[in-house]
Image (cartoon, rainbow, N blue to C red):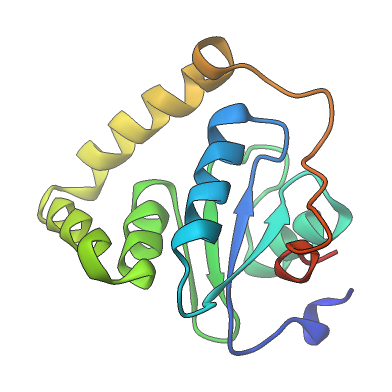
Amino acid sequence: MEIQDLPKDKKIILFDGVCNLCDTSIQYVIKHDKDDVFRFVALQSELGQKLLKHIGINPIHIDSIVLYEPGIAYYYKSTAALQIAKGLKGIFTVATVFQILPTGFRDLIYEYVAKNRYQWYGKKESCLVPTPALKSKFLE
């Protein structure tokens, strides 16, 4: 898939495909994405690398979740997590109260968890392979 072929009406979450914490988080988003807002791309995939370059993020130094809204904006670190919660609607919008905290402070906490995620939650040998039922939610 090429950048111009991305669905324009979906928000795209780029995530660490070998991180157990990230995998659990993505499964959670899928389960609660009642309005079918999100699509998913592993950072390690060819498309993930192309997307990072397209939006101007150095793919070598990325250690964060990224939310990309084609043609609109992109968010990363804690801001991406809060925007994803906002997109899930319902009770999840309560998480947006954390937007009152300075971005630098939120990102400091986010970076601490990101730095330790493999040690705390483990790491897979390869990226998640979606079930046939979920395949349409993952972009390749």
